[in-house]
Amino acid sequence: MAGGESQTPVSLSDRELQIIDLVAAGLTNQEIAGKLEISKRTVDNHISNILTKTGTDNRVALVRWALQWGKVCLNDVNCCTLPLPEQKE
Image (cartoon, rainbow, N blue to C red; front, side, top):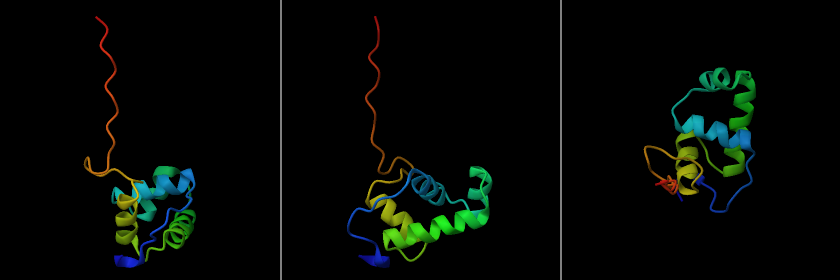
């Protein structure tokens, strides 16, 4: 697997998943910090922990990992479709 990506599922917190989603959306650590109203240093720490947990080396490898494991949805890739609500007649 390229980029040293983990081949086994890992346990990530809701906050870590939220940060992965924002990384996949292309936000910088500073932008993520502003959006989540936390410090950039906290974002840096979260991303460092996420890279360690997922066995990835950088943000690109992390996004690839997240796509592989269905943790993010990008431009309708890896998106599950929800059933449409039934129409009342």
